Image (cartoon, rainbow, N blue to C red; front, side, top):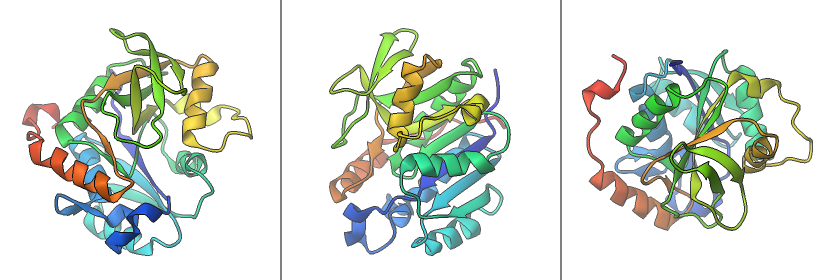
Length: 241
C-alpha cells in the first residue's frame, strides 16, 4: 500500500451557468459551505498533507478564502486563466510534490465517507496505475463514459463514447509517471487525456462511488444539497490518525 499525501483541486473554469449565485463557482454553497471547502475538507479527512489549487484570474476572492480557511493544507495557490481543463491539470502537475497525486475538480460533490473510502481503496492499488472514481449515477449533460474489461476487478478498457459501464466522477489518483508522458498536442481537455491514456494501454483502474454530483447548474446545486442531507457521518477508523 502506498499512502497518498498530496492533492490538487482544479477550479479554474468560468462556471458561467452558476452566475446567478453571485459568486465565483468555487464559492457557490452546498449545505452551508462553498464547493471548494467541501473538496478540501474531504482531502483533509483522507489524510492529504498538502494541496494545490488552481483558480482563474477572476477568482482572487477564492484564493483569499482557501488561504484563510485552510492555511495548513493549501500550500500552493495558482492564479491562471487556462484554456482548458487539461492545461489546468498540467499546471497543477508542475507544482505537485513527488509521488501519487489525488486530483478533484471543484464541482465534484462527493459525500465525505465515500471520498475517504475511495482514497483508502486507491492506496491499495498498484502505485503505477491511474485510478478513476466512477459512478452509475448520471447527472451530467455530457458524461464521460468508462468501459470496464472486468467489472469485478475494475480495470478500465476504454474511456469515451456514447455509453458504458459507469461515468467518471471528477476525482482521480495519478501516478508520478504521468508527469513524464509525451502528451499529443491536439489534446485539449482532461477527458481527452484520460481517453488517450486508455488507448495507450496505461494501467487505469476504476473504483465506484454510489453518487457524486457534478455541480454545473442550479439544479445540480439542489441535487448536491439532497445528497448531502442523506450522507452518513465519516467513521473515525477510516482516517489515518
